[in-house]
Image (cartoon, rainbow, N blue to C red; front, side):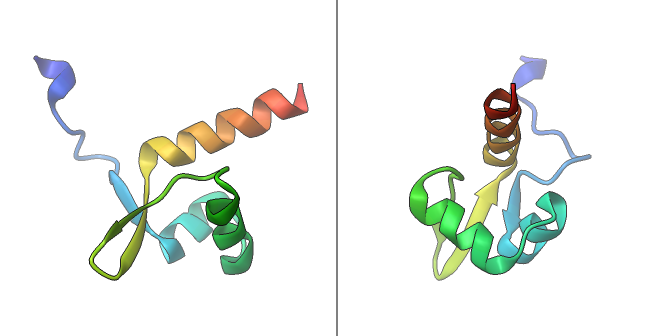
Length: 67
């Protein structure tokens, strides 16, 4: 069951400001990506969070589109 353990070396959820830095995108671009469905996000209370898996999926999508 080692695959079920959460890695402590990488955050699992990113605030918008952290995702902006990680992806090198502006706040408005990030919110547009979320609105359009190209970048998944979740909400916890009033906070919008981007899962690490969503960031990886978005990068993979960009790589597929570039090919």
